[in-house]
Amino acid sequence: MSVLERLGMGLMHRMDPERAHGLAITALRAGLGPKAGPFTSDRLKCRLAGLDLPNPVGLAAGFDKNATALAPLYRCGFGFIEVGAATPRPQPGNPRPRLFRLSDDRAAINRFGFNNDGMEAIGARLAAHPHGRTGLNLGANKDSDDRAADFARVLAHCGPYVDFATVNVSSPNTEKLRDLQGKAALSALLAGVMEANAKLARPLPIFLKIAPDLEVADLEDIADVASTSGLSAIIATNTTLSREGLKSANRDEKGGLSGAPLFEKSTRVLARLSGMTDLPLVGVGGVGTAEQAYQKIRAGASAVQLYTALVYGGISLVDEITRGLDALLARDGFANVAEAVGTGRGDWT
Image (cartoon, rainbow, N blue to C red; front, side, top):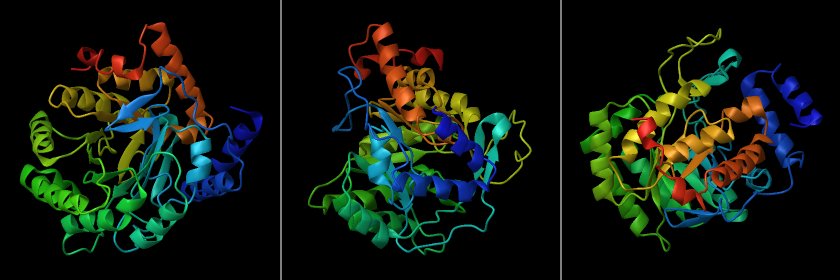
């Protein structure tokens, strides 16, 4: 991390977290971020659900909700980026404050509630600024009469402008949204999404993002539905409702917990799911070092995503993790990422 980045982060950590996040997006758009682009090598080049990536380190949904900073974010080194979540209509989300740092735990709690500019504004930005491998996280309006149909509506509108789409039924901040992870509800929801996808001129790989707070039986149901629904990948996992072992003053705030405390829980879910399905998996939750990205891959992930670690490690962390991952693959004799996937699953199950 450069001196300038360290000073900037020190300043932002004195601000309200949501304001600081907005400032970070503004700074990136003003050209204050890295300029090199994604680091790649023959070891790091990989395929995820048919998509060729320069490296397997992606940006999770939520950082660039409204697709306003794609070009500068790709220059920061990400192999792929997921924007959103987008809902059919714009919505303000939950009242502020709704984002909390847990500095002692290198974590965050948010209860945003799908605040976003809506699919029309987000779709227009995606259409105007195509960059890299970009996915869209699909969401539902809080006051929708048919949340399942909302996912299909957003896909139909924005699908032509992205490379993949993620069905997000795992956010804890929209009431009863996680109920859609049940077998019958999930099957019906995905049927509607797949119908909308089939009508696109260029059907997309469809991903499903799941919660970390699922029992083994729930994971088995999801794996079963995934195998018959036409899904292309599963993202494991979203934020957790658990507060076990936290030390920070904000630990009791309502919302989803992300960051370092989620690493072990999410990686165990990832490894268990890897033994239940042949679909590619994306490992998310607590990735803050190259070693942790490598552990996710060896637990069964074909690619990883990060977000909260950037709050504490800065945007230069992307390049640090990518280069470190390349070195770890070389150290252990793997010719590429694919060779390493799942080789350490037994350590987590």
